Length: 127
Image (cartoon, rainbow, N blue to C red):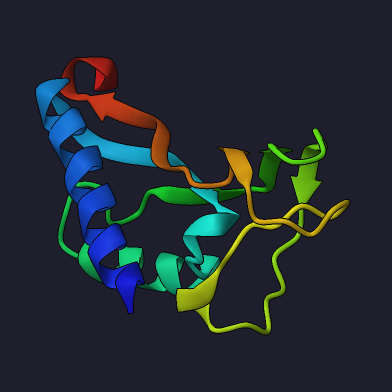
């Protein structure tokens, strides 16, 4: 279950950024997760909830935006979104062109796993 390691990394990054900005509380975090990462958003959210317990982001609103897979085919020139068969083993995800069915593609989007934005509160903002 790679959701736990990704959740831990994301929470650590959020808390590190919050600390560097003198936050007393994280109120929101927006995450971008590419579909090609094969991360399950519900499992990722659950793991984030576990990892963030007893931290300044314990009550933060977590928003996970899934990023569709976008490719450019080196064989036929197709450019656009594709859908990976979600019934396949998640360790075997291969992006293939929907036009020519070749796997010689350049993935433009869909591999992301980022903390896009966070919202924080600082002590001086409470006054």
